[in-house]
Length: 124
Image (cartoon, rainbow, N blue to C red):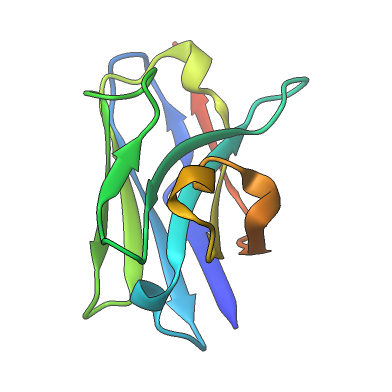
């Protein structure tokens, strides 16, 4: 079982990146998949998630309109398209799988398996 996050890098403010979370060893769509991020010295925060129960996609309020999560079932991969990036978006981004109740989708403690993270640095 593996979650491979990729796509991070250095980007200028206002730029875009697309992160990928490739799953192997299990079927991605049967789990709730979320993106989290953690900046140096800060707590981990939930960014977006696709809930397995209703296949709806949810985004955190502070990135709504700039970030879009999606999933490609044929490729067994989830994505996070990030536009208009800001220096405050600098963080290591992780994808995680779990089966949380919908009301707990933002709670990282209920996710049982995590990818290794990909670093996003937004700087001029």
